[in-house]
Image 1 (tube, rainbow, N blue to C red):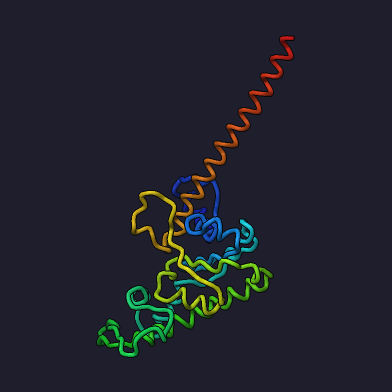
Image 2 (tube, one colour):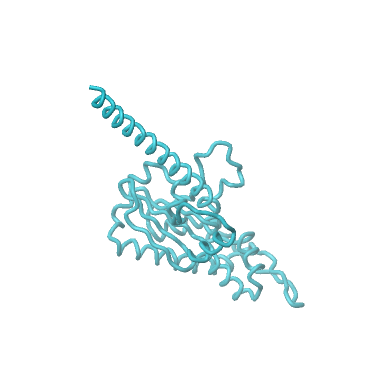
Length: 244
């Protein structure tokens, strides 16, 4: 995936300063300093991959990237409902939930017919069962990764979810049941005048990249100023020595 990004940038004649892990970028827009210090797991559920970053004492102590994300849930829905992936994605976003028991037994939605087949009603709980199974599997996989890293006892602040799938109803509650810690949805913040559309976990990485880039440039400017002061003092000392 990284090589594909580099090829796209090269073909478009764009220069890049750095390649940044999605979970790291997201952390800039959604995590507080307190959360980084106390111990927090940031889980960025992308379309094709998911990323985790474990913060302890203000810095990342463990990170990982693995296949699987929102597209897997979409594919499961497409297979179960016998609809194309684009229709499955639409159904997931419009009617999806991550906890079957949180939905009324009587709630239904219309599954559109394809290839001449008639539309049909489906219980919202049945759709949630599909989503819950895949999301729960992903969370248990991540939990095992964290336990293997030896950092599971240091997650004092809990878990923060970002990415498109974090928008699904009850996804935070499902994650809390699996990890047995507080879980919240990571909405971008800290940027004045940000459009409400961007205040979504779907845009956490994009907003975080902007914040990461700005901080990197500010740090370089400060470093250059500091170096400039050192050089000025150095040459000033030489001039004074030569004029003696």
